Image (cartoon, rainbow, N blue to C red; front, side):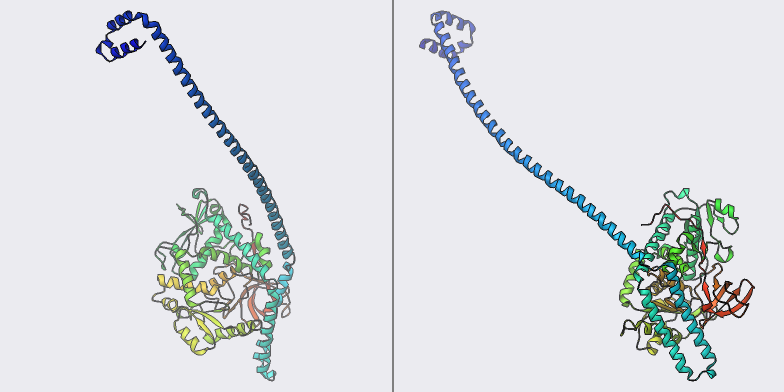
Length: 579
């Protein structure tokens, strides 16, 4: 066997190993040892197989053990995961139950709040009570003016006239203070009602002015191309938007080339809606009512040249009339104020300007706003009024206010187109704190009136006046009327927060302003129930107008008549539900 091994080794290590013939001959030569060689190989294979098999079993056993260990670990981890999942599920269920409970609690709280609101509303005064309260205040003030005027005229019949007149004024202040306290009892309710209804009107206007498809809606074109001032322009656009609202037309404002700003209305204010185009407008004053209703595009005429429809100011929509009348003493002014608010929403740049100016001026309340009109309007549209006339009413307001808030600092915001007015006020009334923007007054001069600086100044004045607690001005001024209209949108009922030195409130181009007599006057010249086309209040206890029954001019005590709230059918915009 050893020889065979030597043979193989020798043969393997010599080149003859690869010679098959030699190998075969060697195998024959040593054939007698071949069985031994085969047995050796067999034993070798068995040993190798046994060793390999043992090693393999050991490896397999080791791998099995490892697999079992890993499986046990996985089982433990799986059990832990199942526990975590179970606990998480329980927590999730608890969270869901908590969320459901919270939702139910929230629903209950909301329902309770709604009930409380309804209960609070149930406690507010009725419409009749509110009208009666306002009428008592108005008629009493008018009666006191009437008595004051009679005593002033017939002083020779009244001993110690000055003392009597002072007593009347003091009684008037006391009465106003008492009426203010009475009104304040439901002041928050009026403010909330005004806010809620105002939101509804603003959302209706936004719906009208933001159609999904501009091509599919009817349009009303409003051009800002006449030469009137800023206040006049505001009211012209207001009239356009009211007409658009009443006819369900989207208003398209064409204001490029405006004398105050060549880039148009959006120089200072937000756009009034989508940039819809209007091809082939039909002038409204040339078209009959059928053509106007059917025309896709209609152009708004100037207010003075058009026949005014029933829904024009001073009318309010039928669906909102009673609600406005409930909390507000002059529904027409509140209604118009909503449109003025919408068209004068400041853009970002203008809003920043107004806020910055307000902080620099240290504008705080309480404060009385005074607009003193001078320059080109005097002698044409208005009479000259001295600063003493304005300050008399400022003093009266603060005298009444001090009855509930003694020691208040008396602030006055002055808006004027004459820069000298401010210096005059400071000199004559040192006990008052006067606030004014000098640049606004200077830019309002005739030479610079139609400039962007002047535009910012007049917008500032209107904005600040509307924030005041009381206005003393002349309602012949469109600037003052615009401020008064905006004031209504900021409060519950600010209908009596003014003193006009000339006219009653009016809207340029309005329909007939009518009063109704509630008492007979001078036998048959004025009967109870007669309708008066009112021309004006003389602020001495008397008003003047035209008796429509007799078609003649009449002069009568103001307290013997009441204002008629004009109503008109307008779209209800059911697509815009109230929030």
